[in-house]
Length: 275
Image 1 (tube, helix red, strand yellow):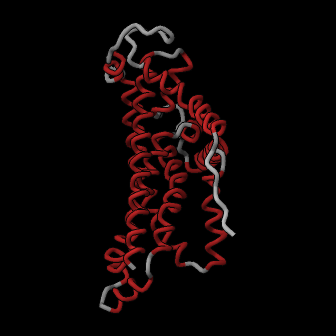
Image 2 (cartoon, rainbow, N blue to C red):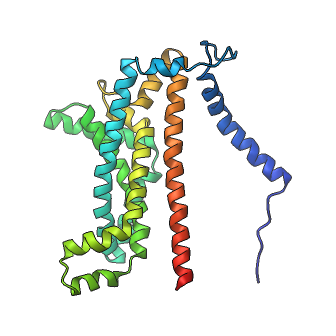
Image 3 (tube, rainbow, N blue to C red):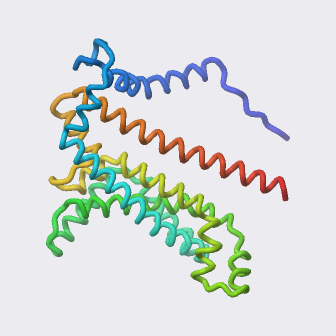
């Protein structure tokens, strides 16, 4: 017995269009008024790039920008390395141990950001009283590494399941040590998952606000935190320009991730068809 999926009718498409409109219309309005020649948020007065130019002369914004890039780059690299070895460890475990540990690994992804941020803040504050350190760049970086690792594991595990274990055994039989087999066989096979995990970690780190807010302390600012601080005073055209750049950057990274996944699926389908 076969069942067919009906295409959405007029009302279904209209409902979807309304949802997309209410989600993205404010963003498009923000992007449009980031090019407005005056500070008005309601009246279009002309086209200009002045607000984008003024961003590069604002020291607080540029410092937040450099901090965001440094945190995102370092946390993505460290989380990718740690997540890769964690994924291999999970994969080589017995099922009775791997299943509960994978559930534990998935908790930070399902947990609310505010719960993760508050819990990490309390952890760092309690450790700080013993080890005598304060919230700052180090705690912010550590927090980003912690919440990025589960996403890296989630990206790499499917590639490990697709890996033919006979390849590793064959490499060892031909004289490779385990380390050499790891670099020559395992890493090339799971490299697409590693790159996807790296890009996802970098994207999440750039976009994060809640966890950063609770773990950065008072002396470190990221771009999302800087935008929040600026909106508490007033919404200026510089905020529109900065938000536009941040939105387009994250959108571009997400497009790269999705394009890579589609290409990988196409390659797998072609390999299956050949066999």
